[in-house]
Length: 439
Image 1 (cartoon, rainbow, N blue to C red):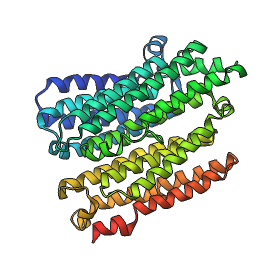
Image 2: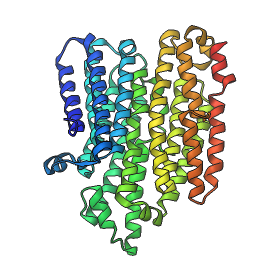
Image 3: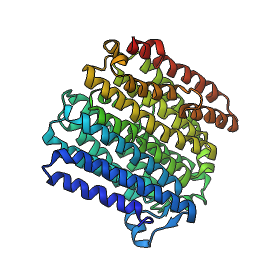
Image 4: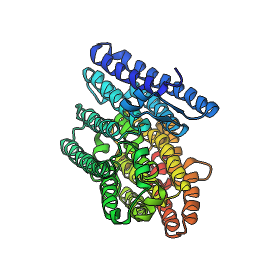
């Protein structure tokens, strides 16, 4: 059973989604959902131990053809384990807060969509097949849209429409980019694509540059890469806190994961650098880091500030991918997983503040630290991690990313990382936010 853990998790999530739609016992749905994600997390831990003990393993040809689950490795299991752990915590938080945002009659639909979305996320993490990956990606976007559509106290019809329009546009660009690769190479998965590109001809450089650029832009729209993040901040400021935590901490991370697969498993580092696509991703990553932080500084709403912070923090991931070496991919993956945990903690902390005070406007949160010291302590811990205080995950990312930029022979990103850390400290500063909350 341990070997088939990923398949079992997908089936369990889909079956439970069907059950939620059929049950009227709303009070049990939170506990069932949280229990399912906790079980999935434990199963993935056993899977991780199994791979460390016996090595990565292959699935039978039938499962490989249907889902594209070919090689189950430690990295994919590690990613999904962190996802499940975080979602279990968000579900626990939802047990106390979701009914304050959503009509109880809508809660079964909300959880059904959430389980379908996370089943699709699991497939994207493990699959190597283009068709399966793309279909699962579409399901993720559409499930997220319908979750956003569920009526809540702060309606945002324009933001919802912009989310759907821009993300469908991103999916279209990704489809065209992948279709161009398949047409030229006849490859249907990353392994076949990599093998086909080993015979790369220089006259095809523009063709492969264009196809990969379309994929990067399409994924960038879904993954809030500069300058395609317009749909995200206003929307995340108005969605229920549990949904904001799910979308920001987990769902939005699928784009950089797919990008990593394309860059390192599909094109390969050598070809990606030869086409100078790494330079483009470095520039866009730097722009995301700086623009997200600059916009965050000027926000008066705490949830919107955190949304812009997400843009900045994902910029580190894109910069690390763009560095174009194995060191960079490790840092990108570490930053992605660190951000999953810290961002979920921050959104849940802010959600708790909102439920007690009734607002997320920063000036009106004065004194909330006295009322909710543990909540604000969790918020502060996540904030100083993102600033890059030593020992915490954010510092580890910034330090190693700085070393990776030096390894690549470029010093400009090093100065940008320093400037970004200063900007992070500015909008998470003690005298602007934490002091205001404690006073």
